[in-house]
Each structure stands twice: as structure tokens, then as C-alpha cells.
Length: 385
Image 1 (tube, rainbow, N blue to C red):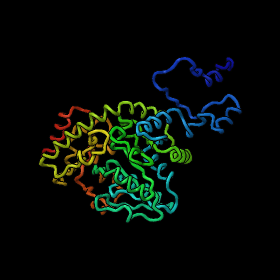
Image 2: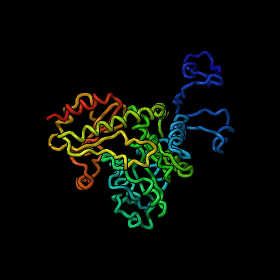
Image 3: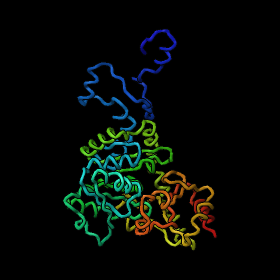
């Protein structure tokens, strides 16, 4: 530590611990700093020549890099970048591929936030979104224009939990010369790695299963080195960089992703089984084993959606819940419920919601790690009328 003298004010400002040279922390430290120090002008020049690692946390930070690199490795991608939110990561991925005048294809069941970003914001830059039904009767070629650059897919859609044939649609898109970006938030790399089927970019709202404890807001984008290099520039230039502490929390949560997903997927399967036989429920949305046959593991995810037979009871249902909270998010270790019409899909018009089946009586449930008997008992009590 530099000798700064005996004056109180100077000593107080320069208090601190010298960098550790020998002792190695078992856990990654939190690099809670906005800027990194240099020992000389030559060292600064070396940084800009590509020989240094860190300058300013908006440009890069060890905690940000640890999280992005870990998700990239799990997704079998070449590189990754973290962002301040899932939407920040989606924006970086879209802008890494798209320019003014480009055309994007996406499922008609696209997440409401992604729809709002493309339809309301990026449309102002001349980027056009076309939502299509991705089923056996759809020919991707019939929707492709000279300006079409990207097919945007979701592994498991929100909130109706549709699983499209990812390998099939990625293959079609590639044959047509399109880039493919996949939102893998609901499935996580534990269940499927879209990169292995040819996806160019994979994005996660790390707020959800990556973090896993509802205490962090972040996003992660992974893919090829050139695309991630461009996406990183966008994250930096748009000020969407992730804070070190948030990155540290998400990386810590990632370590238990496998055990959490095992328990949550198993619980969700039992919840779906219970709801299918309940007289107050008219329909249950939960992926089938056939639909998820291309997944790396025989699980169908940890989300369950269902529609009440009597829509007028929707307010009664949410009021009746005791320990299961109503929250406009998902994927924490605690079971929670949400209401798509009034939260995630507010950006959809009434006509769009009707066309996709997002009705007033639809409930989206994120199944946690609690004892399955307790989850089912709480649902049974709230559905008793």
C-alpha cells in the first residue's frame, strides 16, 4: 500500500487492501468497481492494443465475463456477453444481425416483451416484424423476402408453452439463408442447446432460471465469436452492461441450475397431471414428451399454464392463494403464478390475444422446488368453488 501520509482526510480516502498475489479465493470475488487502475501510460496503450483485460466496468468486468463464459460453455457456444436484463440481451442480439429495412420472422406466440421491442421500438428504425404460425402447414419460404434476415424462435413459448420442432425450423431457415436466434429461457441449457442444431445466437433472461432465486435482473447472449463481438459493442454503446454484483449473483445461481431444474421439472409434471383431472380447469398447457423428443433430457420444463373453466372465477382464484404469490415473473425456487393478459402480454391487442389463446382465464404457473404434495394441496384449495 502506498504511503499517503498521516493526514486524516487522505488516509481515509486511500484505505484499502492491496491486490492479492498469493492467496486464492475459493469463490469468485465481486469486482465491485466502476474503473480499473493502470500503473503506466504504456499499460493503457496495451489495453487498447488488445493486450489488456479491463478498463471500465461498462466495457467489461471479471464478473460479467465469468457469467457470460459459463452460459456459453453450457450452451456449447463459442462466446457470450451479459447484459443488464433479458431484454437488453435480446436487443443486443437483434441489432448484431439486423439493420434498417430488414425483415424478421417470429412465431405468433412470441413473448410480449420481445414483441413490444420489435414492433414498437425497432420498427422506428425501419425493422419490420412478421409473426407467423409455425406448424406443419407453414412454409417458411413463402414468408421470406429479399430483406428477411432473421428467424426468431423460442424453445418453449410464453405463456402457452408450445414447443416448436427446433431442429426442423432452424434447418429450414439455414437453407433459406437466414440467421436464427433462439430464446432458450424456459428450457435452459440443461434441457436443450439450440447451438447444436445450428442456431446462430441463443439468449436467456438470466433473471429466470439462470439466477434462479428472484434476486437478480440480467440477460445473457451466446453464439459465434463474430456475432458476440458485435453484440458486446452494442451492449457497451447502449449502456446495457450488467453490474458486477448482479453478475456475481447470477453466476452463483447458475451453479445449482441442474438440481433445481430436475426438481422443478418433476414437480411441474405432477402439477400438470393434477390439473388435467380437475373439474375447474378446462385446459392445461404443458409440453408433451413427443414435442420435446429433441431435448437433451427427458423433461418437459418447469412451467405449467391452465385455463379456468369459468373465467369469472379468475379473481377468486388469485385471491384464494395463500403461500403461492402472484408475481409478473417466473423461475424462482418458489412456486408462483402470473396472469398473462394483465402482465407479460399487455402489449398484445385484444385480437392478438384471442388469436393466440391468451384469455382472461389463463393462468401461468412457475413450479418451484417445494414438496409436490404442498403445491397440489394449495392449488386444490384455491380451485375449490
